[in-house]
Amino acid sequence: RTTAPTSIVVFGGTGDLAKRKLFPAFFNLFIDEWMPKQFQILALGRKQYTQEGFRAYVLENLKEFSRNNNYTEEQWMSFSEKITFLNFDITDENSFLNLNDKLTAFDVACNKRTNRLFYLSVAPSFIDKVSVNLHKTGLASNIEKDRIIIEKPFGYDKASAIALNKLLNENFKEEQIYRIDHYLGKETVQNILAFRFANTVFEPLWSNRHIESVQITVAEQVGVEDRGGYYDHSGALRDMIQNHLLQILCMVAMDAPVEFESALIRDKKAEILKAVRRIKPEDINHYTVRAQYTEGVIKGDAKQGYRQEPGVDPNSNTETFVAMKFYIDNPRWQGVPFYMRTGKSMEQKKSSVVVNFKDVPNKTFVNGRNNPVPNQLTINIQPEMDIRLSFMAKKPGLDMTLNPVEMVFDYFECAPDSPEAYETLLIDALDGDSTLFMRSDQVEEAWDIIATIQEEWENGTYSPMHTYAAGSWGPAAADELLSRQGHRWLSTT
Ligand code: BG6
Image (cartoon, rainbow, N blue to C red):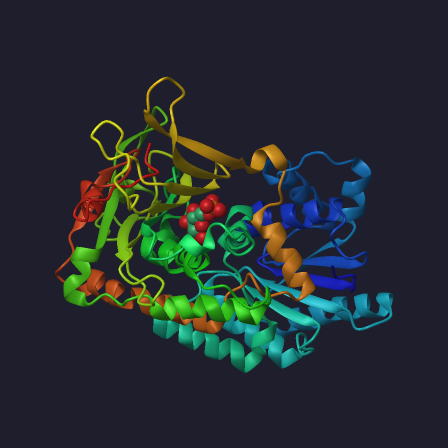
């Protein structure tokens, strides 16, 4: 792990992400002794804070958002000393000069040119200014030591993603750029690779020879909360499918890399995205379902409909739910449907991958009473974190009756307090390990996959907007998408 002294610069230091995720992550890494001995965090923002005021604000947020509230006053004091708030205007060169002073002073104190991690947690429209000014002022010019983390949304469509990549590549080298998708930092998502490639028993079955279908669900119980303004210009396809769900798909479907090495892994993932069959405009209604939540009840509380949410256009045509079917045109996956669905204001928070195996190829137990249920492998990503393999077993007793049973690996039993996704990703970025970050080609391919759907949904005539009551599992059309092929959503309880 890196021991190199590092300056961490958070653009958007007073924003929501910094408050909920970044500061708690840095603090937990500090407590667990993963941070380099010498580091400073420069939080940049437009609000006015004194140093004491800002540190008090960070502490307050840690109490609310950190996974770990088990720390001493002394630990907090030594962490808080490393935080400096800088009042910052990204359009003003003086702000960058001031930042330069702070970075240089740290270099002098450490007696070397220290590493620099610039976290761009700003609205997409500001990335341009920040990148150009960082480049102009030479603050991130050391290719080996300086890294830039970019938050999603990474573009709005394929053309804007290409433009953004171009802009970044004009100002930095690709190896300096870390495009974050926090799903890749989740323990359960990372484990998919360990599960698949460090065991002999699953990989030989992992193809169209034995797998009937795969389902990826990311259901959220929360609605759009106070993000209506952002979300209404995004929607579930852009907000979730283009990034998180397609990244999970890559982890499930990719071939084994020769080594666990960043470029090799990213090559294999890019191959999957390239092999995903593009959907023709006239087939979009057959392959996709979009829907918006209407009023309903969640956990006993009345929930308003999407169009009534603050910041949302009352005539909005933005989808809060997507279900779709993909095919991957390569020898391993030819013919296997990959179903995906994601939505807000759903009955439960539940993210999972379900691998549904084919029927047993022999008729030994097919006698009407004992019909074997096909094996299922469920990878629960959150909030449950486990892997479940269902298989048939003889029910103890005098006759030959079969029952499905489960083998379970439960994360909470082995590690009740595992690190958060952002902790994993930040430590990787500090280390210069880009394995779990997205490369420009992946991002562009992912946009390409959804491009015709985006266009058709915006301008076309083939796809109706369905509705679903808040607190449900989505519209009936999402069930029909599967039942047409004799399948059904398996993680719905
Ligand atoms: C974000 C989306 O990327 O992921 C949000 O913009 C969504 O809309 C969130 O709620 C889900 O993340 P998690 O980690 O809570 O599943």
